[in-house]
Image (cartoon, rainbow, N blue to C red; front, side, top):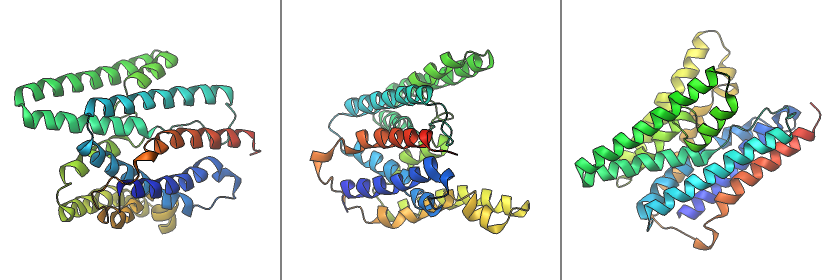
Length: 267
């Protein structure tokens, strides 16, 4: 299965997930849409790692991801300002920023392996920017400067503020590190998805939540483990290159459309 095929599957599953996210309040979208959607983000992280390994220019790859992250964040702010009444809430989605940070970490890892001294400088530069962005954003938020904090978050996305958080930021680099061994990658993914997700479901169950809510109604991120059979079938091929920007444009457009639709529907 090529990376294009994987991305196409992930696009469809992502659409189901976002249908539930933005229109679930209507009662017309079943919860299993978002269960299936748990598979999409890991697949995109996997494809990012593979894409970065085979790209002709990592600088262009990172720049493209950054520009789309900026555009997505600005579009989210503008749309929620124009249509503030959506029952679905705001638009927290921007996987571009998550993938960007994962890709940046991979580049830092590679630089460290190629030239330790230069790699250390790049790591320090990257970590310094991230820490400065996070703490300055926190200070602005505490001071009531929410607009300035939002702008800073757009310009400098950090692992604690992007969609999926640290969890999905580090998943891409892990896929990259284990890309040469399907067996090791599978073990890593099983440990990562079940070892980090199931404990929270178990904890909620032990604290008195029903088994359904603990594993299927509230805490169901562990279902991402079912993406493994699809990742296992990856054949190392790129697939159709003519649809290179399909994901880049489909992702923000379908989210904005779904949000706009939700804003005009009665609660």
